[in-house]
Length: 355
Image (tube, rainbow, N blue to C red):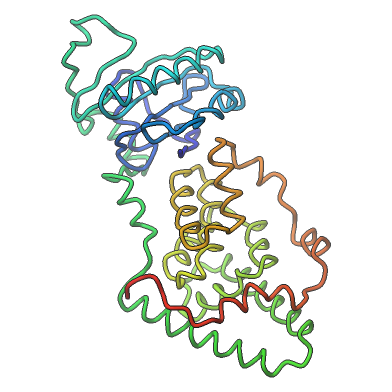
């Protein structure tokens, strides 16, 4: 399941071809075997949500709560795939909408280049063989392009935008990571007071993270490698979380692609948070999938994935985030135990990604 907040997107949806032209731009890619719900409030699309077909058990359970929370006044449903796959899902969603008192303005099924309406049974308007359409010729496609919206051919291509960097970039990052690890090991060997070293290191790491979040310059391989170690420390990662703004999304995307795999889960989770904040829940879901493939137990990724699955708005978390001072008060002074996750990354683990 994935969703996108579309409150700032203005597209005129006056007919089924307009709806079908808008969906790929609202999601960021052209869906297949999917159930789409466009929630309207005051005749504007407020949210776009997508589920894989066939539906998994209870996947629509959060749907009625979302309708109420977002004050949805009308619903548009679009299913992509054969009738045997789409119709049961559309029927279930229509039933849930009816129980919630939300009228369904349109319900469509799309297969290849034809669509069918579940709300129209007039042959002259909606022939049994379906209605052909071409979304590229609609005004909506032009409007979406002007607004800077992009519709990639499929989800796989969107996933590829977060794929690990390869070639010279990967080789450079491996060298930088190895050098950074060697320096850290040397410092650990030489330190006589582990708690004091932890205090010094966390202070340095917080400085590096804050600098990265404010600098418009592309980070060097050494800077990225250092941040990989830094973000393994929960206090440092949470500093990035609490100070996050939409403008930081490119930073976390860059780190997710360039870091060695074992360092990726914190950066990918921060990327998911940034994407979710900006309304791009599809990108958030893909980032979380990347984090959990590498570390299936990573708690921040699980927390955010649960929020996405429950169709929760990001403000439920972002409005309650602690400040840096709150984190200091809650966690106290840095101790050597804080460095345990970082020490685990010092192992010379081979990369899972090709150079």
